[in-house]
Amino acid sequence: MRRGATKFVLLRFMPGRAAGLRAAFGFRSDSFDATTIDRMLAQLAVLLDAIVARPNVRVSSLPLLPAGERDTLNRWS
Image 1 (cartoon, helix red, strand yellow):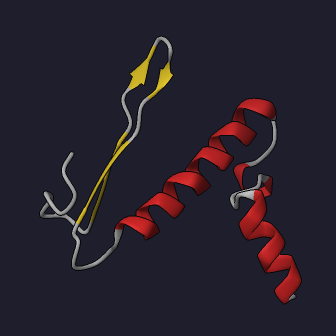
Image 2 (cartoon, one colour):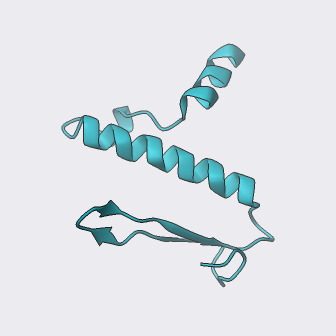
């Protein structure tokens, strides 16, 4: 998917495969920049890793932030 090539503000595509998932995001460049999308993908990766590691835990109890962002948030609070 090319950046800015969607009529939707944010489009997520994640087809399942035998070897795992592949994710693609489309986004309107007047609403998001590539850095924001990269952060969202990193957060999704953290969540998916946690789901695989702890499949019986509620999603609301799983981590969403990568370690660096979590450390920054903890320093602020």
